[in-house]
Length: 67
Image (cartoon, rainbow, N blue to C red):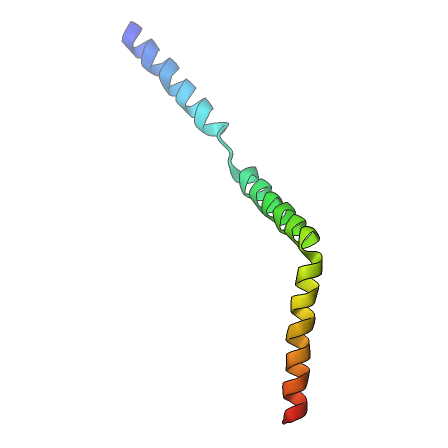
């Protein structure tokens, strides 16, 4: 009798714990944190990135003119 009650309580605790382990929001938080880090890197290295992009587009324009 006591063992059956203990098993019933244990089953209820397991079902309660599994019902409250909703991890769907964790993916959203991870994506937001990754975006924040990427935006921060872009802000920090803005001048360097602008120079690289301008250099690449300059080479593309030169190669297009040479055709």
